Length: 293
Image (cartoon, rainbow, N blue to C red; front, side, top):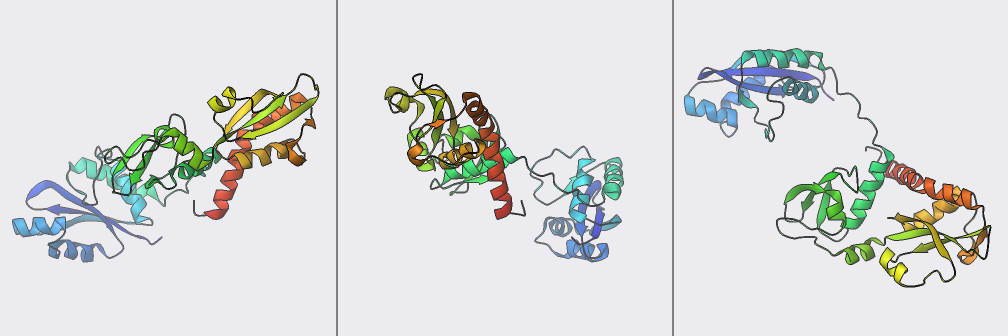
């Protein structure tokens, strides 16, 4: 991070027209550029009016980008979207002064708070569901059920929608890229269920079942034979889920996944702890792979 300046330019053609900018050059050098580069928006105003911008004031700042963000946040224009880097506005001088006061106090950008474990997990799972669909996730997913996220297709269309819609196969609303049915998503992402099975003829014994079938499929067929589903968890990563459930039970994965003598209350608690444990494992792996995040 390099220190620099936040500056305010005014234009003789309109007393309320100002240009807010940041630079690591001297403000005078940046002023000369604005008055001579006619391809830029500020230069176009100079060319059109025949009048040059003037340097009204400037402040030295340790973190120019952060100071600029704080400046705009202190004005009534903070919520104007798509400023597109022009930052030439008609502003009352009181607004400019409020922005300058805030920018002077801004200091350096505070460190980002670490993302919760579940955000890493949901983001990982969403990217898994997007493989081969020509859709890219922009940013993170904070909820796979009700939260919104931003996506971009290979044709350049960007949109924001509920993450669950895209996770279940919805494609680009503009061109349809990435549209899949739920069965295709299920098979490509290898989704599944981890089940806690009991047998009333075998008290004190449980079995952990792993299936890639949907609820409808394993309800229609007797895939567990004499075993009854006592608890189940939908899991985006069935193999990881099976590994972790036995870790939570503090036991090795049994050969051929045979039944085990385990207290049912202990097994139920392991199933309650499974999803948070998966979140922690995925977050840890993502932090190691992408320490900058």
